[in-house]
Image (cartoon, rainbow, N blue to C red; front, top):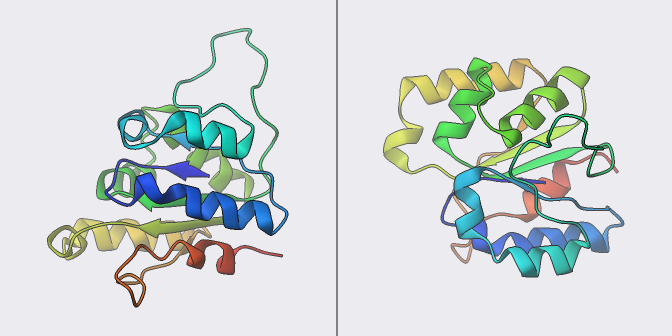
Length: 158
């Protein structure tokens, strides 16, 4: 699971709990800016894994198991545009690029305001991700106004 620095990020525990309940083993990667949005200790306690936001050092062993699927939520305007353009300037973006290149199931839940969502660049980026096989879930929130975390699990292969 990859978390970006957007307003819903502190609520990612809801998605983590639901994924664990469905039998997924969850590891969380965070963009460097997202770390400040998270209660890292709580996420680590919930998953049993450290939250990763930086590349490992040369010669350092892999730190988490290989992914079977990837959820990117909440995904920001900046991260989506960089991902679609092939920019890999942080560990999370490198992980997106690898998952897409490996053909893993990838689900993305954008968290972008109306002004940025209406930008032509954003639309092109979403189209590019869809062409790469990414399942882009766009909703305006749940009925109670919260972030639609559940869409991620609904879109993953069972």
